[in-house]
Length: 301
Image (cartoon, rainbow, N blue to C red):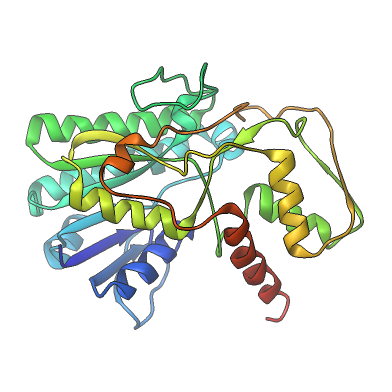
């Protein structure tokens, strides 16, 4: 594996993927809907009906990492058609372009733990019941099925990675970003839920490292693989750790109100990933330090 194409290269995961793969001396090309720069090979596509055929014809990557698409549960409820276009139709466009232009490459699709909904038992395994509770979760599941379809029917080398709660520099949404914004406005913060909900947090560099491990070691026959740490952390403890690292001395309370589409508890079984030799390098505490430094650097811009 020498050349990698990252689709969604201007997003949270995509930006880190470009940085990491370049640091590992791969030839890296990016693709997104915004204007590029001169630091990497870059392909710009239309936002409404992106055409990937010419991109795969020119780039000829060994691996394509699809880190594009919508990534908001609340927005998926408000705009399910848009979410479907970005998370399902665009994956179909990519796979069809690969089938026609570059059928020998590996394709890794970034899916989500949202396909599980609220699991009946933890840690959740890849073959456990699929029960999405949001349009976003359903659409990510449909993108996985399409990847399996193209593996089964056209022998394309595909895999979907079910990412749990990714965080790190560049993330401007979800719990930690919301907390950061609220700490700048006062000394009392109220969050949704009870605080006893739990997540499996994975630092974004570990996520990208996992995709590299999978590209090298997985069968790439349309399978799905959990990408997480296998460590369950309550929202309350994650929030406390975050504000301590940030150096904020206010008070956090929980409203008890549940947001539609949010699962209760998540923790992944990462046996498949571990069997390929992957181990997360970054603990939640050390990841928080890196993320908080990035957040504080934003105030200096």
